[in-house]
Length: 159
Image 1 (cartoon, helix red, strand yellow):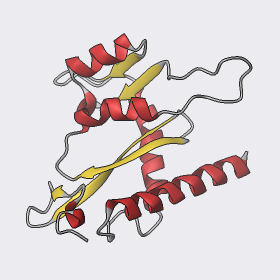
Image 2 (image 1 turned 90 degrees about the vertical axis):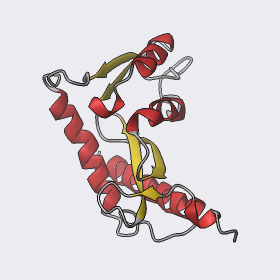
Image 3 (image 1 turned 90 degrees about the horizontal axis):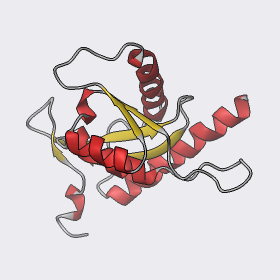
Image 4 (image 1 turned 180 degrees about the horizontal axis):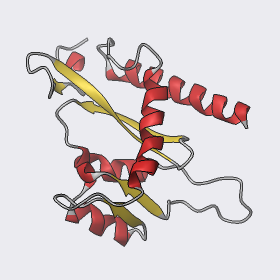
């Protein structure tokens, strides 16, 4: 193992400056079904990951004909607000519903944001994920993918 491979997707923690860390970014639908989870360094801005999320959404299956390949609307908090992201989402024919920096929050966005926080909570119930113990990012991502599969399986089982 090379010395740099242990430092993949780690950066200074915004909470404890003496330690490095990583964090998860995720995108889900209105029911909390996970589409994409990305692990980045702890000091990476949320706004830089927006297009990686949108590109990671798989095509929607189960409908007759050609399945839609993109979501129609993307909801986000103020951390994802930027003119570049809005322009890029509109270019892809996706309506961005993102609170603007310095403006009051969008009414009702808190209810939808609660779904994302609940999904984060479900993901971090797997004790190995909130604190990254694996040195290699590919091992950590494998555990994240396994947790996502279990969450989706449990949601399908309950319906």
